[in-house]
Length: 73
Image 1 (cartoon, one colour):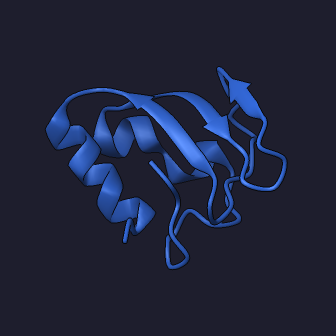
Image 2 (cartoon, one colour):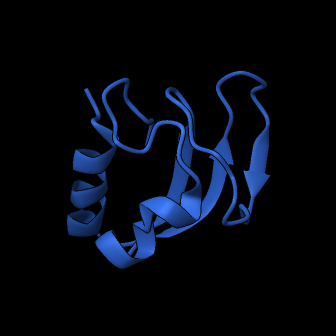
């Protein structure tokens, strides 16, 4: 799930956007847009930025909820 330019998640820590609580998804990894590196099992203080890609685990309806938060175009 790519983080869009209008996402409320931009510039926030993973723990502050509360993805598991709000969607039921598990964030397995974050692929950084700037460095193209994968951070597996990301720490809760990881900062999310526009263009970063989150690899998540969950059901389709949970992913749909995350799409709204991520402002997927």
